[in-house]
Length: 345
Ligand code: DOR
Ligand code: ZN
Image (tube, rainbow, N blue to C red):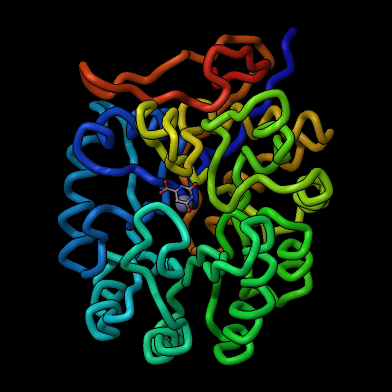
């Protein structure tokens, strides 16, 4: 008998769905497993206002495959000009679940992000009063800071002061990658939590750079050292409720990945839960997966449990090489063409 693991239907608490043809190609991949997702707002142009989010939510709803139940949880893209009144109205009307802080130019489509975090004090003040969650891309962008240090410097220079100035604000430090960030989140109170991606649990930077460069493992924050991955693996094995599932599945077409200046993002949606299961099994803590995938995060967001369950079984399968978008281009999933030993039944 193959080993199996049944868990409550999970949520992906950090997801890029894009728009148009890419949205239609990727949404079924997430909706096959996850009931809800925190949807990132870094479209071009970004999802800034309540009206933007309503319209995007409708486009997502229209792309949900027949027979699937999937609820997008919308986020507001914070800019230097965010209107606290519109943000509050969107939250109170149930349009926004959270707001996302991108430091300007930190990552894909972050050009309209925030140039001075301190200047956003009125927005954070308002969010704190509403108990609206702030999701953060935690990297500084100063050119003098090495790309491998950008998260750790952000924690010290931006996140620590922000926590001091807004002690009641609930924050998710998205896609943590370093031992330094893990230690900071662990030592904080329950108002600070973090998401962890499958790639940061599975790989260190050697996997991306030794023996040839693998552009499909290039994401931001960039993969770090083995000791950083070890810190991530340690906290999930410990079952800390402060760390939960957010894939950061970030599709870019093969053409824009396999080029002289490739885009950042790992497209993990087609293998997301299977990849986490592989990681947790490697670590020896498969029993921790249900709470990581379907408990800690939804509780942090104050969401009810989803109906139903999902069952994983240990049965090898080969991941498809590509997910077609249309006739001209395609997406290459994480583990494309490779064998994975866990699959969703
Ligand atoms: O690798 C990444 N890709 N990191 C991000 O923060 C954004 C994402 C994207 O939107 O492509
Ligand atoms: Zn992201």
